[in-house]
Length: 155
Image 1 (cartoon, one colour):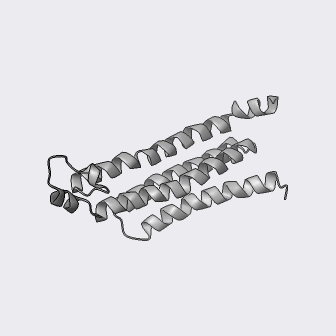
Image 2: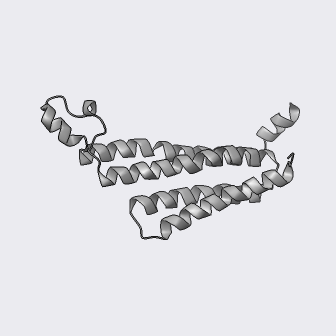
Image 3: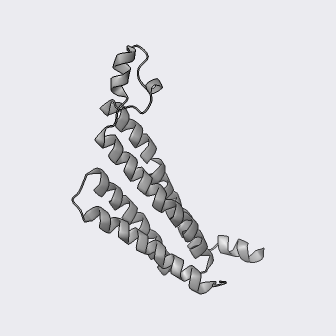
């Protein structure tokens, strides 16, 4: 138990906590951004989300798919598919006792890649900008995974 307490007090774990919080907050902010786009584009997912003082026919026109809303939703979905594995793998990586400089590099590269990916997705910037941001973050996560597997290989 003392080893776990020591690991949690380590600089690497504190760095992971910081960057995990940043990337989680960024992911969470995608929901209000989706709501903002739904409201400004008047493109709702459900009838009950539309205004109360409209006729049923007018409400039906507002329940539609908007390309801008869908772009934000896909960006959020991509965050969910990448941030959650980063949280799990990053935690396990931090517990393997890596050098602080190596851990900071992995965490920073991942977080910056997710912010750049978001900008590239929402702007929208031409490809391969978004793909490069995605791959850089993925490689950072794979690199941490490699460290975990080579440090505690119990296969």
